[in-house]
Length: 207
Image (tube, rainbow, N blue to C red; front, top):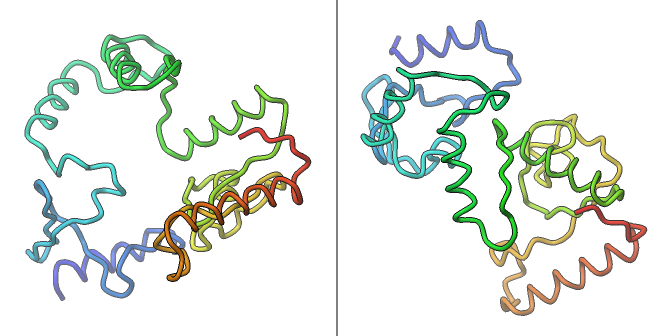
């Protein structure tokens, strides 16, 4: 039995079966990673195109980020946003600096799901309207609301409960009919949006 197979057997014993690792019957058991590479526990090296679900865009174990992370861990590990600290303020200032227009206030959340839930709630509270227009082929999160907003069958199981979500074509040329130009795809998407607004909503759009 290889190190990977041994760990996978232990994994099956204690992990809920709905949590399915990638790559089917032969999932990778990651041991360590550096920059653009990931090594499994058996010593095989992989070029990482996944990037920790798109969260490691500067590479794994980046020396500068690792050093700064360790430095912060020696000062304070977690205080939540209920308490003010300078690092939080500095990060918010940087976000404001990079954000265009009048988007000059920052609200931190701990995940993309929570960010999308908060954005939907804020839009509904601000407008007083319920309907959300979302794009097909898009992923928005794993809560019940964001699974409804998600338009990818793999991620919608058991979560489609919000009656005020409508989906429209995504201007994604890879998914468009081969005979269409980019301009035709855009025109088709605009037409689909207009028809959706006119036929399956009452015009009261939150976002």
